[in-house]
Image (cartoon, rainbow, N blue to C red; front, side):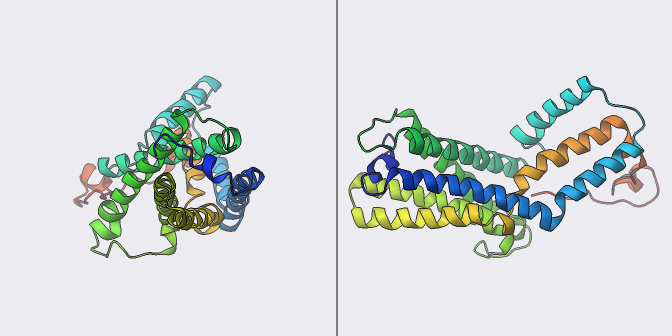
Length: 264
């Protein structure tokens, strides 16, 4: 199972052009959905206005070399290491899900566009990584969903409670879970169940990529921009005009002790 390309076997029934077209359509849905999300929520307008305000409030100019260092620091700390999470469990769960998702997506594209011909031979590394990526998404995603979510861990809600904001993680978990089950039954030669979970995998994938305007999918594109903007504000001194943080009264001896927020 782990070494077999599932798209290779199904290409006997489904035309290769149809599979490639499906992938292209998913990419288009993400692009269009993200643009719609930016326009509807006015995210781009907010970022540009905030950037303009920060520039007008800046104390000193940030040079090109320093900007490059900020870009590298943002990529290393906020993107690759998810350093914005205070809770280590949530950070690990997020990293497992994120890297698993990236590996799953990349290997899906490679196997469909390069090795999905019925008679072609797929290097074992790609199906192995495809299954590993889906498995990592499931480990990180289910760990987060059942044990780390704020409304479950801190507020006592049922782990099966679903709200529109959960659309991204639920559809992602459904897509990777159904993909693994589909691959298992296809490898076992159980045709009916293999086709059933393949169709469920397709439906979950359509919801995942087609539901961008209603989910947190586009959030992954905004977070690096926001992190970079915050680092730039620190570097050019424009944060000096911002009010002190919530725990500042205790620090400055104003007689009010406040508890730092807990992040789950």
